[in-house]
Length: 203
Image (cartoon, rainbow, N blue to C red; front, top):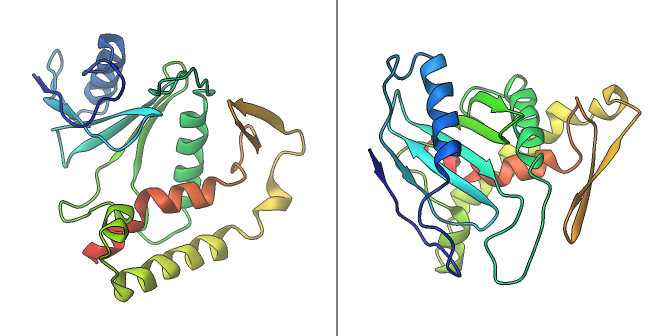
Protein backbone atom coordinates (compact mmCIF):
# COMPACT_ATOMS: atom_id res chain seq x y z
CA UNK A 1 0.00 0.00 0.00
CA UNK A 2 1.31 3.45 -0.80
CA UNK A 3 0.25 7.06 -0.51
CA UNK A 4 1.94 9.53 -2.85
CA UNK A 5 2.21 13.01 -1.39
CA UNK A 6 4.34 16.14 -1.58
CA UNK A 7 5.15 18.42 -4.53
CA UNK A 8 6.13 16.96 -7.88
CA UNK A 9 7.57 19.61 -10.17
CA UNK A 10 7.47 20.00 -13.91
CA UNK A 11 5.60 16.88 -14.88
CA UNK A 12 7.72 14.54 -12.77
CA UNK A 13 6.06 11.22 -11.88
CA UNK A 14 3.97 11.33 -8.72
CA UNK A 15 5.45 8.10 -7.38
CA UNK A 16 8.97 6.66 -7.29
CA UNK A 17 9.90 3.88 -9.71
CA UNK A 18 8.66 0.45 -8.70
CA UNK A 19 12.18 -1.10 -8.67
CA UNK A 20 13.33 1.54 -6.17
CA UNK A 21 10.43 0.76 -3.82
CA UNK A 22 10.97 -2.99 -4.27
CA UNK A 23 14.66 -2.67 -3.35
CA UNK A 24 13.81 -0.65 -0.25
CA UNK A 25 11.16 -3.19 0.78
CA UNK A 26 13.72 -5.99 0.38
CA UNK A 27 16.10 -4.20 2.75
CA UNK A 28 13.30 -3.74 5.29
CA UNK A 29 12.53 -7.46 5.15
CA UNK A 30 16.21 -8.29 5.53
CA UNK A 31 16.36 -6.09 8.63
CA UNK A 32 13.34 -7.87 10.10
CA UNK A 33 11.21 -4.73 10.03
CA UNK A 34 8.75 -6.34 7.62
CA UNK A 35 7.64 -10.01 7.68
CA UNK A 36 8.95 -12.29 4.91
CA UNK A 37 6.93 -11.67 1.78
CA UNK A 38 5.29 -8.60 3.30
CA UNK A 39 5.45 -4.94 2.36
CA UNK A 40 5.42 -1.83 4.52
CA UNK A 41 2.99 1.01 3.70
CA UNK A 42 4.81 4.06 2.43
CA UNK A 43 4.38 7.63 1.30
CA UNK A 44 6.66 10.11 -0.39
CA UNK A 45 7.96 13.18 1.38
CA UNK A 46 8.41 16.47 -0.47
CA UNK A 47 10.93 19.23 -0.19
CA UNK A 48 13.49 18.59 -2.91
CA UNK A 49 14.26 17.84 -6.54
CA UNK A 50 17.41 15.72 -6.23
CA UNK A 51 16.10 12.61 -4.43
CA UNK A 52 13.12 10.42 -3.92
CA UNK A 53 12.43 10.57 -0.17
CA UNK A 54 10.07 7.88 1.08
CA UNK A 55 8.74 7.24 4.58
CA UNK A 56 7.99 3.57 5.28
CA UNK A 57 5.58 2.77 8.09
CA UNK A 58 7.44 -0.01 9.88
CA UNK A 59 9.28 -0.21 13.17
CA UNK A 60 9.70 3.33 14.44
CA UNK A 61 9.54 4.60 10.85
CA UNK A 62 12.19 4.36 8.15
CA UNK A 63 13.13 7.09 5.69
CA UNK A 64 14.71 5.98 2.42
CA UNK A 65 16.47 8.40 0.08
CA UNK A 66 16.99 7.43 -3.54
CA UNK A 67 19.37 9.74 -5.39
CA UNK A 68 18.30 10.86 -8.86
CA UNK A 69 20.78 10.92 -11.73
CA UNK A 70 18.68 13.64 -13.35
CA UNK A 71 17.15 16.27 -11.10
CA UNK A 72 13.44 17.06 -11.31
CA UNK A 73 13.84 20.50 -12.91
CA UNK A 74 12.89 21.90 -16.32
CA UNK A 75 16.39 21.94 -17.81
CA UNK A 76 18.63 18.89 -17.93
CA UNK A 77 20.66 18.81 -14.71
CA UNK A 78 22.66 15.65 -14.18
CA UNK A 79 24.19 14.62 -10.87
CA UNK A 80 26.16 11.57 -9.82
CA UNK A 81 23.78 9.38 -7.74
CA UNK A 82 26.68 7.89 -5.77
CA UNK A 83 26.30 10.95 -3.54
CA UNK A 84 23.69 8.92 -1.60
CA UNK A 85 26.31 6.26 -0.84
CA UNK A 86 28.81 8.89 0.34
CA UNK A 87 26.16 10.55 2.48
CA UNK A 88 25.34 7.23 4.10
CA UNK A 89 28.98 6.45 4.85
CA UNK A 90 29.53 9.92 6.29
CA UNK A 91 26.39 9.77 8.42
CA UNK A 92 27.33 6.34 9.77
CA UNK A 93 30.89 7.45 10.57
CA UNK A 94 29.63 10.59 12.33
CA UNK A 95 26.92 8.68 14.15
CA UNK A 96 29.54 6.43 15.73
CA UNK A 97 31.29 9.48 17.21
CA UNK A 98 28.40 11.73 18.25
CA UNK A 99 25.91 11.34 21.11
CA UNK A 100 22.91 9.16 20.36
CA UNK A 101 20.12 11.17 18.77
CA UNK A 102 22.35 13.79 17.15
CA UNK A 103 21.95 12.16 13.73
CA UNK A 104 19.54 9.75 12.10
CA UNK A 105 20.70 6.14 12.46
CA UNK A 106 21.87 4.60 9.20
CA UNK A 107 20.01 1.33 8.60
CA UNK A 108 21.38 0.43 5.19
CA UNK A 109 23.31 1.79 2.22
CA UNK A 110 22.58 0.22 -1.17
CA UNK A 111 25.50 0.98 -3.45
CA UNK A 112 23.91 -0.68 -6.48
CA UNK A 113 20.60 1.22 -6.29
CA UNK A 114 21.97 4.42 -4.70
CA UNK A 115 19.66 4.13 -1.69
CA UNK A 116 20.15 5.31 1.88
CA UNK A 117 17.88 4.04 4.64
CA UNK A 118 17.77 5.80 8.00
CA UNK A 119 15.67 6.25 11.10
CA UNK A 120 13.01 8.92 10.87
CA UNK A 121 13.17 12.24 12.69
CA UNK A 122 10.95 12.72 15.75
CA UNK A 123 7.30 13.41 14.97
CA UNK A 124 7.61 16.97 16.27
CA UNK A 125 10.59 17.78 14.03
CA UNK A 126 10.18 20.26 11.18
CA UNK A 127 12.40 21.80 8.46
CA UNK A 128 14.26 24.69 10.10
CA UNK A 129 14.56 26.45 6.75
CA UNK A 130 10.78 26.66 6.42
CA UNK A 131 10.48 28.20 9.88
CA UNK A 132 13.11 30.82 9.06
CA UNK A 133 11.41 31.69 5.76
CA UNK A 134 8.19 32.27 7.72
CA UNK A 135 10.08 34.68 9.96
CA UNK A 136 9.91 32.29 12.91
CA UNK A 137 13.25 32.90 14.61
CA UNK A 138 13.84 30.88 17.77
CA UNK A 139 17.17 31.57 19.46
CA UNK A 140 16.95 28.32 21.42
CA UNK A 141 16.81 26.36 18.16
CA UNK A 142 19.70 28.39 16.71
CA UNK A 143 21.79 27.67 19.81
CA UNK A 144 20.99 23.99 19.49
CA UNK A 145 22.06 23.97 15.86
CA UNK A 146 25.30 25.75 16.74
CA UNK A 147 25.98 23.23 19.51
CA UNK A 148 25.38 20.34 17.13
CA UNK A 149 27.71 21.83 14.53
CA UNK A 150 30.33 22.28 17.24
CA UNK A 151 30.05 18.61 18.18
CA UNK A 152 30.47 17.63 14.52
CA UNK A 153 33.65 19.71 14.20
CA UNK A 154 35.02 18.44 17.51
CA UNK A 155 34.47 14.84 16.41
CA UNK A 156 36.00 15.21 12.95
CA UNK A 157 38.69 17.89 12.96
CA UNK A 158 41.45 15.25 13.03
CA UNK A 159 39.98 13.05 10.29
CA UNK A 160 41.90 14.72 7.49
CA UNK A 161 45.02 12.73 8.37
CA UNK A 162 43.04 9.47 8.31
CA UNK A 163 41.45 9.93 4.91
CA UNK A 164 42.63 7.99 1.89
CA UNK A 165 45.27 9.97 0.05
CA UNK A 166 43.91 8.82 -3.30
CA UNK A 167 40.82 10.96 -3.82
CA UNK A 168 38.24 10.80 -6.57
CA UNK A 169 36.40 13.76 -8.01
CA UNK A 170 32.68 13.26 -8.46
CA UNK A 171 30.99 15.41 -11.08
CA UNK A 172 27.59 16.56 -9.81
CA UNK A 173 26.48 18.69 -12.74
CA UNK A 174 27.31 22.29 -11.92
CA UNK A 175 29.05 21.35 -8.67
CA UNK A 176 32.08 19.22 -7.92
CA UNK A 177 32.71 17.41 -4.67
CA UNK A 178 36.10 15.95 -3.80
CA UNK A 179 35.77 12.92 -1.56
CA UNK A 180 37.61 9.93 -0.18
CA UNK A 181 36.09 6.67 -1.44
CA UNK A 182 36.01 5.04 2.01
CA UNK A 183 36.42 8.02 4.32
CA UNK A 184 34.42 11.07 5.21
CA UNK A 185 33.66 13.21 2.15
CA UNK A 186 34.62 16.86 2.27
CA UNK A 187 31.50 18.84 3.02
CA UNK A 188 29.63 15.77 4.23
CA UNK A 189 29.66 16.96 7.81
CA UNK A 190 27.85 20.17 6.93
CA UNK A 191 25.43 18.29 4.68
CA UNK A 192 24.56 15.84 7.42
CA UNK A 193 24.14 18.73 9.86
CA UNK A 194 21.64 20.38 7.54
CA UNK A 195 19.72 17.13 7.34
CA UNK A 196 19.23 16.76 11.07
CA UNK A 197 19.42 20.25 12.58
CA UNK A 198 15.66 20.54 13.05
CA UNK A 199 15.83 17.56 15.41
CA UNK A 200 17.22 19.85 18.09
CA UNK A 201 13.72 21.26 18.52
CA UNK A 202 12.58 18.01 20.04
CA UNK A 203 15.28 17.80 22.68
